[in-house]
Image (cartoon, rainbow, N blue to C red; front, side, top):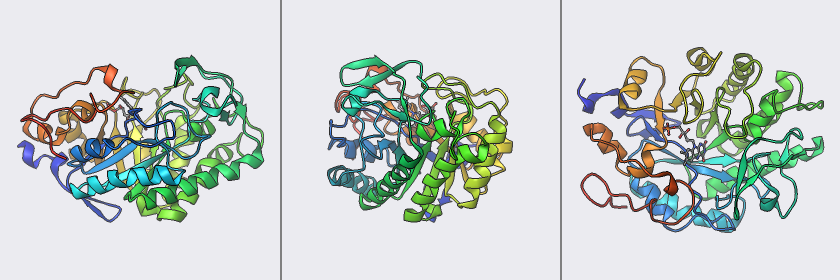
Length: 367
Ligand SMILES: Cc1cc2nc3c(=O)[nH]c(=O)nc-3n(C[C@H](O)[C@H](O)[C@H](O)COP(=O)(O)O)c2cc1C
């Protein structure tokens, strides 16, 4: 099949938006924001350079000070943060792109240094493996504080306000980050949720908080402008094993999400950045539980993306790492050109170097 007419390059209607192709830029934390959670001005250039994608999902963005887990990540809970995102969405729109904001609360994947010495919060007081990225470098995770039942409505309200902030900042919608073992997924999995109140125990109880969050965000945007990211098979970061019954738990989750008529489910298939295999998880049958669009992610290349779309294994495919060093990724995929690879030292932290200065195949990429 000629690349030009390959499924990846055909348009798709998502949440009433006409996407020019089926390529999604996956959320990529790049850790270049200020201590106050303000995205740098050159973020507008970086995202606009990549606006040829059918849809851009922003880097994970903290919904509150409590949600922070990594130094130099952006926020959406202050007016200053909202204002800083406006030139970004305007630049993406000026280049004909679409962009949603990923709403993030890291829960236990955090460190007291990011909370003035206070403990990070989580469903249960269970210490994650590994280290947190603080302003003073990597530091061991600590045992978090279990949230009191009566603290939970305030976090739901933080999500609602953040969703409102995203609207004011000019985004086209939001993606609820319910993946990669951050707060929402910590509640979902029985490996990280040992609560005995109405937010723990049965599947119904463990899904309660994430679904309250979804309902609050849908209240701001309507379901057709809200996507959600899930990772039933991934155990990164923090080393937590997946749920003891991922098909049962995530199947019930998708059934409930389908009721909200969400715009899409963005599924990290397998273990993030590692492997596309996940023991005991049948992605096609999970997908059938949800009627909205399905974005598949993790280790896709051009051939696998087209094969998956052609076999109706997904509606859209997201690419993460390939977007870092290839601002013109869509053109490169379309022409079968080789992809540049970004050294890891540019992934997190630093400035415009290794971020918005990657050239395209034929010189600088305008934005
Ligand atoms: C530098 C970097 C930052 C990432 N930041 C996020 C993030 O903010 N939110 C998220 O959901 N996933 C994040 N991910 C995961 C990617 O979105 C994606 O799931 C992963 O890289 C696998 O897709 P790929 O094989 O196309 O890179 C990040 C990955 C990388 C490499």
